[in-house]
Image (tube, rainbow, N blue to C red):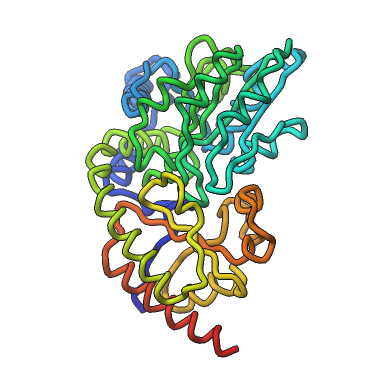
Length: 372
């Protein structure tokens, strides 16, 4: 059975540029820290990948810290932006990824509007009373569940006016939005390779020089002395390759938007009681969050999977569990509606036939559910 993969927000299929770079790096035996020719050849691969990641963000390569993925990068940004003994205050939007919200029990949530975007006035009120603690504000650029685009420039200005640092999880923005403007206004951004079509297990934290992190690993001095240890050269090489190739793939944005909009229009026809979450806010072109009250997300995901279509419910970084979305709950949806939402996400290899296959499977599922 021909399958359609529509879960790019979880992991994008590996791009050919990444595969080629990974395989080439596997032929290099040297440690990037060794001074002999083999080591320096490995270091050249590492340096090229760092330049490529920095270029995508429009930042100096000295600001790039490679990590094992966006979860580690977000954890480092949230927990390591100030010395452990220094009092810290962390504000994060209520719709952040769990790798931000679950780092600390003391994180103060910033509320979002019903449309899913952060209310700048709410952030301003939270920061109005000057606090002696070192403060970090964290707001993702594009929500991983809804595709809603946050007003990052405005929020970063508010944070900086209050003397706070600003962090943005740009994992879902990097494949579909111009990254450089986001990086320019943020003190820290975080990226993930496998959301761009690179290998799993590698990400990056890009931090301006004035941000000094508490080391998470000591013993070698790699990655700005923040994350010691021999670099995962093959994964990093693949990451750099997809960063370099990204401008070419970004040209697919209008096509993805057209496919996403066609899909949503047909979903409304098939199921008039369905809801497109975040439809009233600016959204990236690759994500549709569809609630079908009365049908659990788990039932829908399983039915579509059996029909050959891969989608997900909420964030796919939670060991396979399906639960009501904290994102939709923060947007004001009731538990039943939040528990009925599936996420359909498109990407670099999505074709019209994939949308057709989804719509056919979705219509059959809706008709079947309506008879039960």
